[in-house]
Amino acid sequence: MSVVFSRPRFRLEPYVEFAKVAMAKEATYRFDVFTNIASVLVRVYILRTVWVALYAHNAAPSELPLHAVITYSTIAMLMSLVMDIDQTRILRDSLHDGSIVLDFTKPMRVPLYFIANGTGEVLFHAVLMIPALALALFFVHIDVPSFGTLAVFLVSFLLGYSVGFCINFILNCTAFWTLEITAVQFIVTWITDLVGGELVPLVLFPAALQNVLVVLPFAAMFSTPLLIYVGHIPPAQYAGALGLQAFWLIALGAVSVVMWRLGARRLVSQGG
Amino acid sequence: MAIIETADLRKVFRSVKRRPGVGGAIAALFSREYEEKAAVDGITMSLEAGELVGYLGPNGAGKSTTIKMLTGILVPTSGSISVADLVPHRQRLENAQNIGVVFGQRSQLYWDLPLRESFALLRSIYDVPRERFRENLDHFIEILDLDEFMDTPVRQLSLGERMRGDFAAAMLHDPKIVYLDEPTIGLDVVAKEAIREFITQLNRERGTTIILTTHDLADIERLARRVILIDDGTIIFDGPISRLREEYGTHRTLVITLADSYEDVQVEGADLESREGNVVRLRFDRRRTSAEALIRRAMERYALSDIAIVEPDIDSIVRRIYREGYTEGAIGSPS
Image (tube, rainbow over all chains, first blue to last red; front, side, top):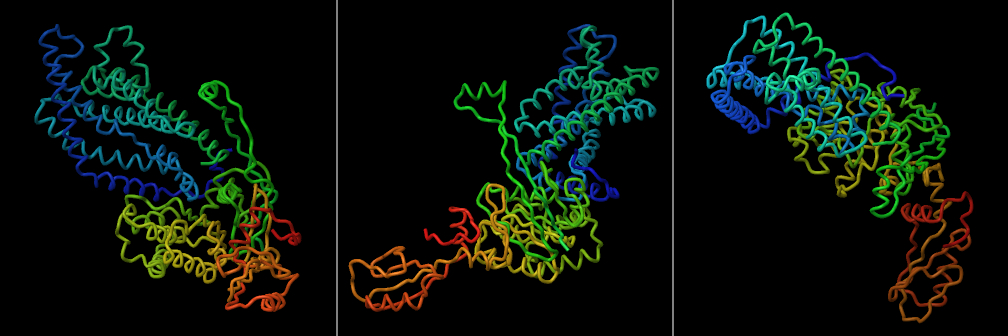
């Protein structure tokens, strides 16, 4: 059976501490922080230029006028500040160097430790979104939706983020079986960028392809919150859109749990 | 009352059988043959609370596998374990609260954090009452001399400093049982001594039960009264270190320095071990030949300028057992 057989009283405190420490650790790489924000701003600027040029030479699609597509890609870049983090890399690392054995000698739920650590890192980067957003508002004029839409967007963003977290966790869990997962991870990131709607809104894809892509979990990560933000998904469709995201979150959450259990079972039967 | 008990403990690992050559490697991608190996093969042992036991064996004998099962990281293939009335692999979280672990080759400190913050995190993980934590920390800072690097990130510490930090980290929650896996590996003499002193104190003053695996037999000689020797996953000796010495350390060496040059040096009742110039080493079985008789015989035949008798050290005893295997009582045949 799984390693966590019996469960004494659960305390949240250590995991909060782990998250805080991870957050503080991220903050020590200050240079990283500045380059991160700078790179987001550069990408925002480049994408804006590309969209302006594309729209000037082609008939603008009725679904997304120029200002909407610029808003879309700016918000997408800001989201990538937290979405593109390898949140549970620490799991892969500790399997790699064998230190996971020591993690298991401590009275803590090891997956929660990894999750807390990733969450701390991400929270730090989430804070970074604020100056990046301010700068983006200043340099590129983006649409600001109504308060209600903004609230739904935030919920959708959180769901999308969680879906991405699960995918990341599942990928890092494969390190229980094989330590070489960089290639797989690269492919998944690339697929996400492409078919998740991070770079190009899915509504600009051919209809047949679109119908397939919108139901994939990758669309749940980027496309859904972004289309809610720019108003392409109207309030009448909120329930369906959020419901699909929630479905993916539950499904991939279940896969995460199974992957962890199988991995941990392998670890306790085959050693670190 | 026994605090650690195992009965017929076994752990079998299954691994992919490697076939030679590129063809074999490619074939292995599609079909795999497995082979099984018992790393631990029927270990039964019992430790009383407060004991300090040396757990010895050559590389690959099954030491680490045993320790991993006792800590609850590995599930045994068969047999039973009880550690402070818990079954470690079933009650990993509760068991973790009772144990402290130091692996010489790995650190449980957080690489980017100063010791102080690592300790604070551990306090929170083990839920150590703040006052008790304060007391323990002050105590360990003093005896392990941690003061000067408490605020240095762990990655900048020397191995000796890091090990001291690791020891404190493993003891902050007052574990009843401590597993030390090669805790002095790679340390210089001074650092080794500091660690040994700390282990002695821990065992003596706090009554902590300690299992120590090491390849440095000076650790064992200095710290443990009882040793468990394993080889090929089975126990080949379990008893006081004095008995090991008595039964296996039957051979002493008489070292004589010749005053004149002689061609062949032979003394009845002893075998020539080595000769370097005028220094001759003669090995003898102390149960068959007394040192006194041997010296007398040597002095009758040769003019000597110096005499010394060398007792076997634990290192050579264990080396001999690893090489020849241990057979109870069967110690007669000189090698």
